[in-house]
Image (cartoon, rainbow, N blue to C red; front, side, top):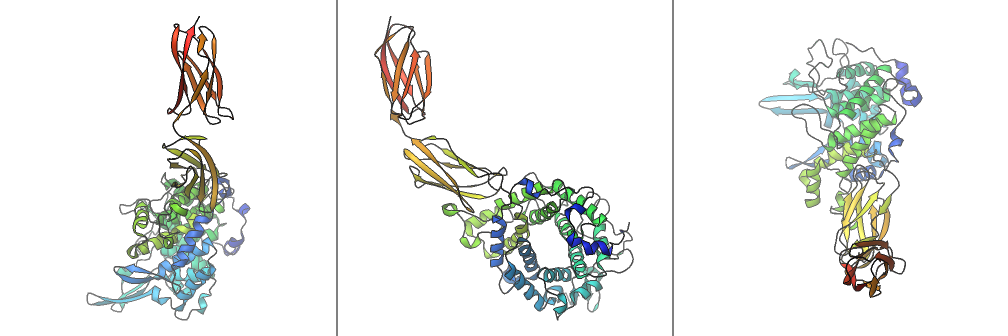
Length: 558
């Protein structure tokens, strides 16, 4: 079926729509703040690292053993930095570099197998246009190519494919239909670019993008054949997280239009339902889909975060926070003495656990740099949904046993946040690192080797989280003071000394037991019942741990 064209009034009003106007099925009041206070540190550090990789306005990395300047990835980085904020100079630099000659990115020409191939990629034209618009550059000032005009020319005007973008492809100067690789990802950028440009083609392009949404709520990545009479998604289509997320990001500026709102609500529900239990996203459902990775998780988290900001989807805020937590746990980050990464790599986001482990061992190697750049560009905006889980707190047992494991518990953190514990006093020289779990808590385990008071300070990515003092106890023979004669059937007073204040103490005498806490002077005064046979018997006292004991011999009399 065809979707009716969007009303011009809806398009004009979309940028200034209030949340109160978005009262359509699937839309709720904003829930982002309900998940906790946003923690911007991870997103800012990802942005800082990404901006630091830009050279002369572009990103270059090694590909197949040679340097490759990636215009498309540079624009991805620009859009991510614009979303994160605080990187205006780099955003402008990337846009300026692209604007010098976008045809380096949009056009191609090469010989192969005796033939000459040439063309212009519609998706690249659309992406270049969106990149310039994001930096506030008027595309009309670009001399090498009329980006709006070129994109309009590559957007079908009539028939079943109306609104569909297509690549211009030739072989030996003749049209080459096999060279058209345009897809939903490019269509999404085309919708965004044409709509922002006020193009007459924007409505048709939006209609065609909506046709790519499937019944379950996801957007497929590949179009139907250009010759098909039905261009809508049919049954059996493979789901694409990336295509769905890009479609959402491109449709959000048109929120307020009934069809767009319905599409956004369906996409929000599908994304939240497709998310893995650990917060990550697979790239899709087809046989070649990649399991949980930062690229797809980043795009999905970014889209869900923006949906949550508009109150679209009851589960969007929580799903965005879960995605941010998974990404943050895979960010190259460390704190103080616990940092195991090169300082130059801090802030980058690894594609998966294997990539992060490799960065810890070898740093971000030149051969892997492109993967880290792409993962970070797609993850940085999603990290903005990192949320604190409450007020920071650091706690541990008051008393610890020398040489045994002691866990310092930290709560209230942003899931995925990195921590470092350092000890002083009896805990000097001890360090422990940890990553906060989904509940915002972490346990840092140490083994104090000295008796006395150990102070453990916990630092997070934003500074000191808190500290705790622990009294470390070593082996000790306790003093046991009592009368040497005890009357059977009566109570016998015992004084145990050599304890620390608050130390739990158990006094046993035959079948009688008394449990008490030491006073401020490190003493326990208690009573035990006297029973059993007449004669000598041993009265025993045990402190907090089994290696802190004392005893006395008592004669039981009538």
